[in-house]
Amino acid sequence: MSAPNIETIVSLAKRRGFVFPSSEIYGGLGSAWDYGPLGVELCNNVKQSWWRWMVYERDDIEGLDSSIILNRLVWHYSGHEDTFSDPLVDCRNCNSRLRADKLGYQPSDEELKDRTVGEVLPTAIRERRVACPNCGSKDLTEPRPFNLMFRTHVGAAAEDDLSSLVYLRPETAQGIFINFANILTTSRRKLPFGVAQIGKSFRNEVTPGNFIFRTREFEQMEMEYFVRPGEDERVHQEWIDGCFEWFTNLGISADNLRLYEQPKEELAHYAKRTVDIQYRFFPEREEQERQWDELMGIANRTDFDLRTHSKKPEDAEGKRLNPDSTEDLTYFDEATKERFYPYVIEPAAGVNRTVLSVLMDAYSEKTNDKGETRVILKLHPTLAPIKAAILPLAKNKPEIVGMAKAIKRSLQPVLRAVYDDTGGIGKLYARQDEIGTPFCVTVDHQSLEDEAVTVRDRDTWEQERVKVSDLQEHLSNRLKE
Ligand code: GAP
Image (cartoon, rainbow, N blue to C red; front, side, top):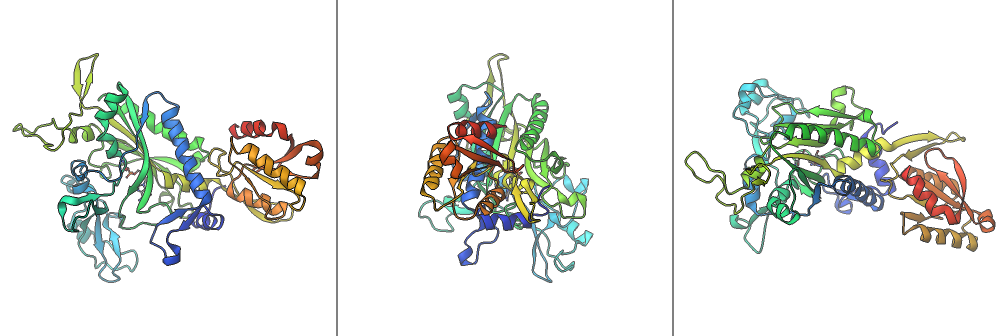
């Protein structure tokens, strides 16, 4: 079983301290969310899991942490200043502001010819008489591009001083491309190799929503894998398969994941091919096709990025295409004595969407002997915010409490454990089940005699007696199962 809808997760997340609406005491800020005590642990575990898989378990990937605010020229040459926009329309009847591309409009091949990313031709909207979903009116304004990058100014400059204008990055990827030469020379890498980065990105989304699915501030896990042209298609497919497997290894059911081949009218201007991994975020929707949405994208970006940020390329008249760059971002192959721009394969995932899919997929309900229905979050042990809860059976017995607290302290160096005595044992078990803690360790009167505790499994509710001296090793092994 998985969550019947996102709303179920919204209320669980708030009730148990995973995610809170941001700035709530001041009325909130549309589609901004704060990660609470359990949410921050879950996010960290997702990021660590990705980093371990991407960087530590391979021999060909380096890490990077680049600035959020970069020189504005980065976004000029990447194409974001010109093309990173959504087509906006207003409904003259109800004043809703809408994304034209989400109104069911599909451009024809003819219209696609001169199209830049996200651009919808005004006539198309008029001719197809698209209606506003909120009120049904067809009285819509013509689409106009709305750039999604957040603007700010560096230094004590005036608001209208264009020389101080900068953007909050809308993707982490560009920080990698502009450091290509630095990483190549310092790490002495040979193709193929990759650079991974995790960090915040910002987009002034026109229609944010669906909880943490689409927000204006979010976190990305991106990796740019540099390959020889000609090897790009094979390597691209390998990363598509590898990423799909990574999600299933995190415990997400393959039934709730699918691959989506982006059609040519959806492809970004730099992409030769992009395949999304989609998750069934909206199982409650009747129409099958509308149940799915993007969890991550895996793009073949060709050599667009390294070429556009390089000082070398020239037009037909010998004029430099990028007169601002100081670096040649080509790669010299010692074996063939050839110099070329590597192609880039980019697996790009969202931390927040991964967290949402993991929560939805882990959600289950179980009915106990008394007929009470309990929520159990069957999180993969690697992702569970707390690995073991140490519970004293009698909180008024100092010897039991002392022993439970000592056990918690002894486990803490190797795994995240908590001590809890704020309720009866049934309630404490239920609370840990609901937040996905794989093991509860109960200290009872007998423990004082036999130096053993009861270890209860979240998923089976089975119990076993384990010697305190073996507990650390026992739990560590079971967490790896
Ligand atoms: N560098 C390529 C790139 O940024 P993208 O498909 O725009 O590609 C990658 O973003 C991933 O980032 C998405 O698959 C999604 O998981 C996440 N993402 C993008 N926009 C988001 C938003 N507004 N809120 C939450 N996550 C977002």
